Length: 265
Image 1 (spheres, rainbow, N blue to C red):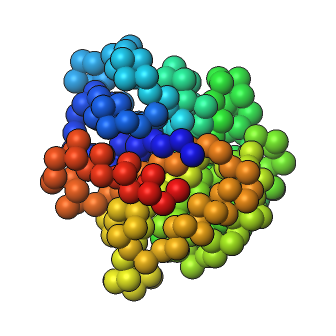
Image 2: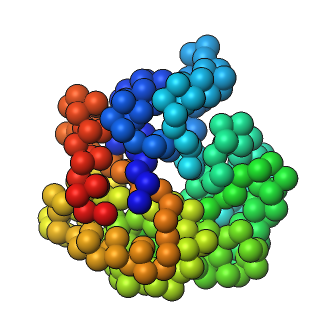
């Protein structure tokens, strides 16, 4: 398995420091957020700075995060949402990311409309050198399981359709880890990695409830075994939004997280 740091895990740290910390901790890759990239540019930085920092640490960028508002935008607002998606895809392509995460509708999802729009994103991405990946989120109203993402992917009819795996979202959406077996390895852009506590109840959990791998109740050994069974050999990316860890030494958080991932998967 190859190990990646999702930069949300050490969110308060400036972008270039996030990259340095990931490299010094021993990761092979880092997932970058477009909000961080835009803040860096607004402060007078450049994407060339980011590329240089990545090169200095020898880090890949498997995905950038994320495109929103495209799935469920009203028709009148969709052109503007699509332009923002194109802008973010251009950033991802410039950084050499093969994938960009495309988040789902938060409420009721029109699968026919969403699948057609997802296909359009994939077609645009193909001209730019980056592949949008259809994410499911356990806490949204409808598109919250592997099966839901797979339905959109299949309806899109596009051979490059993929999704993002994440043990937290599988649990939070009430899904089953065994559903990973419904996917082919080429349908998984990346696997996030984390754990979650017994409390609060599943239906009340959100991103901030995630904990380090092995510190919760999820059967992560089985999760990793399922990735192996489908032949997935891509990146395993530590993704937390835990405010306790945000207040700690980010280098230590990154190091401990990598150790915990290696001990499980």
